[in-house]
Length: 107
Image 1: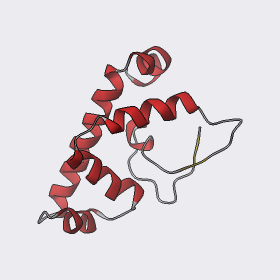
Image 2: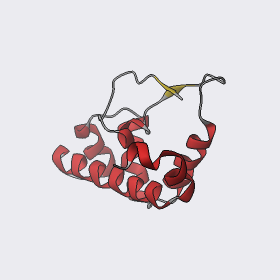
Image 3: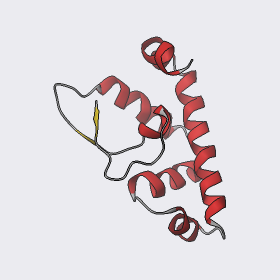
Image 4: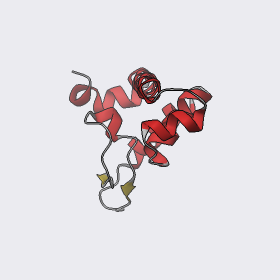
């Protein structure tokens, strides 16, 4: 999969999974895309909302706080970190993810 974020958010593997990417049929790992989509779908609505704001709408934490109805950008940052942790937990619980990527990303 070829990730090409406009403005990278996050440095770890799980943050980068949420970045926009250019579809290149020869390089895109569609199994990983499906695994991440399933893990994302299993998040609660609050986690989905904050991840959507930060990674898809490309909102700043200040804009995210305003858009989701909280007062501080630091709280939006904490909510984003918690949502990424929940996404990571969903991925780690997935047998296909562990089989294919576990040794590389879960050490």
